[in-house]
Image (cartoon, rainbow, N blue to C red; front, side, top):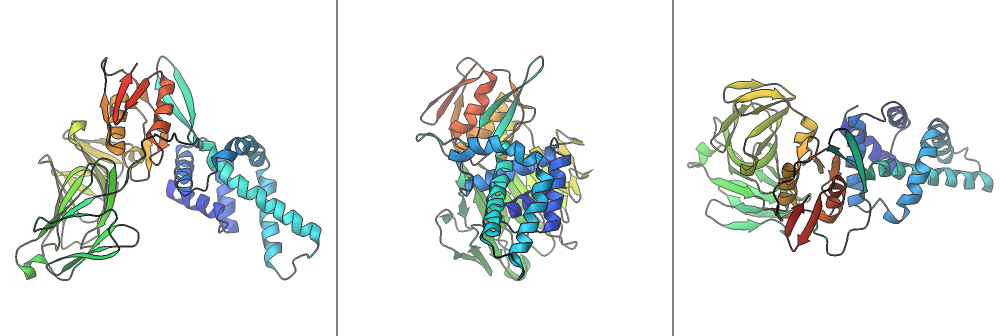
Length: 408
């Protein structure tokens, strides 16, 4: 089972929309794959989503954590009872006795807690400090944030039209926000920007370019005129035609961008990256990390086929420093899925991610400590909560306004 499927099952479990077949699959996974990375990543992401919407109650977390093991140990019995009670409650032959009704309520309440408890297992996030042996430290991410904590990034971007008009997209009402030739720029109810166009640029004459850019502490989603979906990470940009040409689709990016390209064999999709890479694709999912402070451009392929500087990538591979090699796809697109993935990341790499997402300046008064980390933590947490996890490796942090000092 893939992480996306696991997340879907967990969400269905929480809102009681899960089918009996799906429920059996979820419990089988729980029993057989407790140590698998996919399983833990799925639960971590689901926890992040539910916590963001207020479904995880911090005040009850300690009690729930104590109960989770006993509920899991009795999982098979609970599983049978859960659907037995649900079926009895939905048929015309439902027992009408007060005792049976009370029993059903108790079982349903237990399973409501059980679902959240399973998720809260991963609210204890593990950070690996690579020394002479592997040591683990923990931080409970459901703790209430401090009042003066720096909050995580939000959906925020600027749209620059062909005439130079700049439109702040956060706070913009839904509906048509601009017209570029025959292309309408529309803000959808889910917050993303979509282009609705007929025909090609040749029919309109000169190609009209727009640019979407995100600041530090912002991210955004865009749907291009051909149906291609784009996700921009913090401090990133994409320049693109409001209407594509008849013979090709070409865009220019900076920072980090994730693509799900609409298939069109007659019109190749090309991405130009910082004058270092030109990527050609007919239809695929891939991520490009081209932050200038990372020192290299990395293109990672999830699905389909890519040609990067005349070299062909296969799913699970990345192009970097002129070479093709295996990559950790889960880590490469963790940002798009709402988490930080710090596996095999140096302290400097971790701090660069935090600086972009929380819009802070990071300084090292005594030089950069040599530390490496591992594990995942939600991008929806406050900076204070993330730093508490990192401090378990012996690093100390001092925050003054938006200036973070890192000390060993």
